[in-house]
Image 1 (tube, helix red, strand yellow):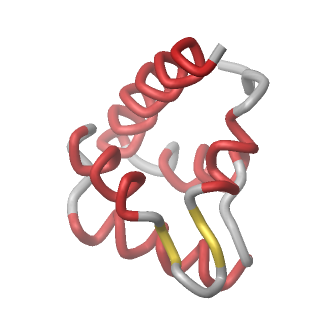
Image 2 (image 1 turned 90 degrees about the horizontal axis):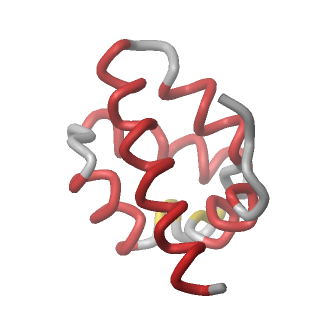
Length: 86
């Protein structure tokens, strides 16, 4: 699966060093079945890196079968969000 345009922008827009993950992104992760430890780990990555990007999110979630399912769901939902914005 390759990166689609807009995903880096999306992940950067919902994460920062000051605030970790935006509430709407936490809800999106939860709706995709991410558990609290997954969300907290991504928040820690956002805070330590300054923001998230597509490659960072993918490499983190692809480490487990469970994470791959979350990633598949995120890809589909972000693609729909991008379609609405266009």
